[in-house]
Each structure stands twice: as C-alpha cells, then as structure tokens.
Length: 192
Image (cartoon, rainbow, N blue to C red; front, side, top):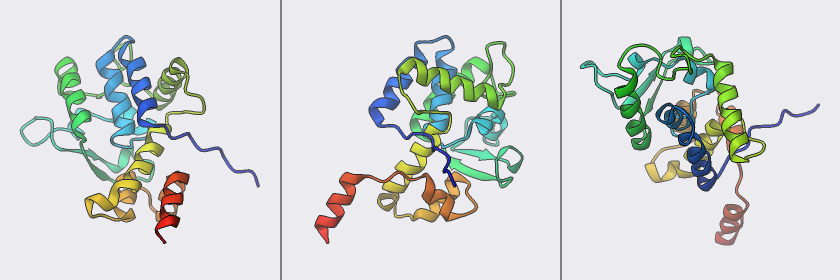
C-alpha cells in the first residue's frame, strides 16, 4: 500500500521568506492574514475560504480573542475555538479596516469569497514564488500542529490540547501531523 505524501513543514526562516513574498504582491494585508491563518491558527484551506468576520467578532462588534469556527465550515463538522495569536490579531485588524465587519475575511481579486480551491492555488503560487518545494496549502497547518506539539509542555498542556486546536477526532491523526526532530531525539537519548 502506498502512503500519501504529507505536506512539508517549514522552518521559521522559510515562513518569513514566504511572508516576504506574500506581502510584496498585490493585496499585502490579505496575503499576510491568509498565511497567518494557516501558520498561527492551523486552519485548512476550506476553513480560510469560508471564514467570516462574524466568527471573529465579540458581542460589541470588535475583533475578539478567539476564532470561533462553526461545524458547518470544518472538515469534521465539529465546531472549534482557537485563540488568536498576537501576530494574526494585528494582521486581522489591518484587514478589518480595509474590508469592514461584514462577509468573508479573505476576499478574491474581485472582492468575492474565495473558494477552497482558490486558496489552495494561492498557497501554491506563494510557495512557487518563494522557491519552497514540497509545500502546499496544508504546510502551514502541519507546521502549526508540529510546533504546538513541541511547545505544549511549556504551556502546561498535553497533546490533547493540540488535538482540540487542530479539530482532529482522533489523537492518532494529530500524531501523524507531527514531524520528528532528529536533534531533539539525540538530546533526549543523551538525557536518559
């Protein structure tokens, strides 16, 4: 049985290269927010495409502290809440000032909601222009899950918290997203 190739995770330096590419194209605020929704919130392309400002606003109509994804836009059909990373919050505030509080967060060139396929193609274009091979729209999500798993102990949490942020039904699925780190493995064995 052949195994499907997973999207590549990328380093912080590679993320900044992709971000630099994105903000130097048309619609820099939209582009930055799109990348950050993937890398700092772990959203899938379809979730980015369907994200609406109402899912981000608090009761006073201001940008809240969490992304509230209803089950209707998630792959699993289960709602989830994701705290908004400070960098993502800044990018969303700039975008909010441009688009206003109604409708889709990420708009196409024509000012309409993007389809999931359009978001996938957008990421492919960014990675191609950056020279990052093996990356796809899922690279940000895999990088988010991997980084969260590596850092969760510092937050006093467990892999279950990473699973909930990712919206995975099974912890086994979450574990498949996490890239190993040979340097960390060497350090761990030396501590034993």
